[in-house]
Length: 79
Image (cartoon, rainbow, N blue to C red; front, side):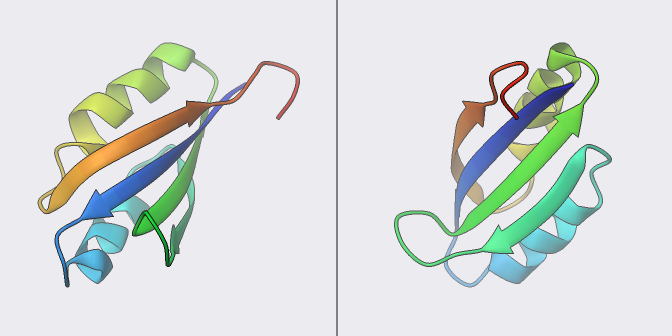
């Protein structure tokens, strides 16, 4: 099982819209609005690493008002 945490910065005031869009993505397990250096934290889970990679690149980064992302990939057997 592959897992990832994605830290997201979005345009000011668009947090609710971005959170709503994230919740529609199949591999997304949890989404949190946060205070600090990032606006949103989400975790993803899939049987295949490649599926996570594609979702992060093409779906999450493609959401309107997402400015930047940082991805933390889980270590197999540790998550």
